[in-house]
Length: 424
Image (cartoon, rainbow, N blue to C red; front, side):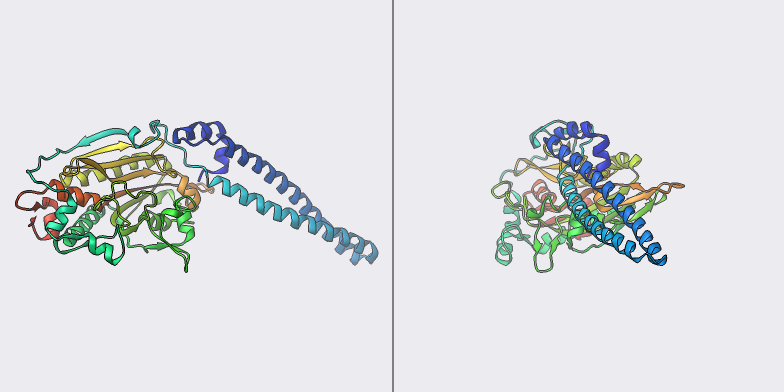
């Protein structure tokens, strides 16, 4: 979240920049500043009363010591009354601070100055494209029909076992899925990301730290008995490794990668591009996360975008890179690039990755800080993450774009992992 100090010092900037995200901040910013003034006044009064209490305590002790018990008892009565006042002020201060924090978490991150104006995904800005869209043979099929023809993904069985959005991968389909995961992880470790295998459930503190709570609890699966949440992305547990950590400036960059299943309720998305692998409740993804010095985070964002682009290019998929507009960028992100690949049989673009810089927004929630060499006061780090890559739509595009009359041809880079060249 934004720091109170930043809002105090940049009130007009916050209000104007958040208009790019179509967020009207005037009212909530005014409430925050008014509450902060009330908090300061209450704090000053309480501090003054506490100082008076301390002074009284010393005087009472001296009076008793000097045999002036009557005067000491009178002062003791005043001391007791003042203690009640101080406690009341403390309770009020706690309530004000909670109100203040509840308001602060409702303010989105400030968008980067390069974020285009827009209300929806139609207003996103294409910044690059590559690859060639293949021409398919007559009778080419969408991936859900290919999955059935070659018996590699069973959607009906997944529906029986769990429900819609939980497919079962079989035979060469399962091996191809595993091959993609291994390939993406190997490319990440080659790029010097440390591989970790985090838990698939997180607590409330972790959900708050990366911004999923309290904003997106309706999209996450909640294990109510233990009050844990199934992760929507490895970003959540991996970034939270650094919660409450103070790094040295020499420790940058921190680079981590993880493969995990991801779980999303996708509430409100029914009927929208849900066929086959297009929108699932459980899916596999390899994530890359970096913790970086604020002065280097945008160079790092470019580096991460390049990493994802090389993955997509190596699979010979037609792609485009979009800079998300203010109306489509996430609550926590300052700047996001989406990757889409073209699915020929469906004749549509499918999102396969988002790469984002959150600047200090997550770090403030995480209390993730660092110290410059020779400096005593810590400052907030910057956090970044990206899908590298999310598998369902990558797999859908691979199956559709590589289908021939003889079968589905496996991209060369994956053959050492699959052990076969074609699904037939």
